[in-house]
Image 1 (cartoon, rainbow, N blue to C red):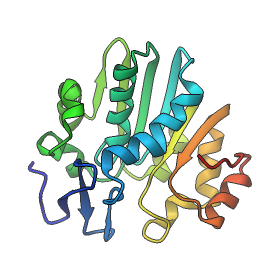
Image 2 (image 1 turned 90 degrees about the vertical axis):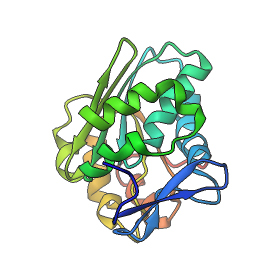
Image 3 (image 1 turned 45 degrees about the horizontal axis):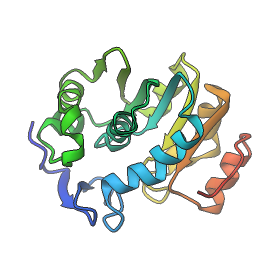
Image 4 (image 1 turned 30 degrees about the vertical axis):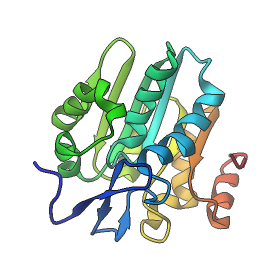
Length: 210
């Protein structure tokens, strides 16, 4: 499985890292202006771990896996910061072929030390060692999320935009997420739309702007 195909096109973003354009959703996976690696770190990983990094164990729900940047940036950040936190990441993803093709994707040099993890994920949809456990939940996120038994500490709400993938931004979607969360769970997202903030608020998420 090579990455460039009839559904996705690799695209260079402003920070020098590659993202991709989805022909199906008519949208890039990341802001090409901000950059794929920058966006994952600054909009999701760093804000989440600035609150949760003292925890000994963290369970993360990464919606949706896509190119894997949020998951891989989390591992990169933990390794770079020398954190001892044990992390379990659960990530729904509908596109099996996309995940299988990631071993040929041009990831940034920052991910070189976790290349073996990327390869394992693209082959087995699973990786585990003493510190990290990653599970890709293939299929519709709306079906896989309610089946999760673990209690979630961090949610990366990073689906395609509400305009292109509205089903993963509804009040009902956030209710399903809230049902599997610990009381002090933290959700990060790039969207500040009023309807999204209201949907989160109605499910007992407090709203903060980072």
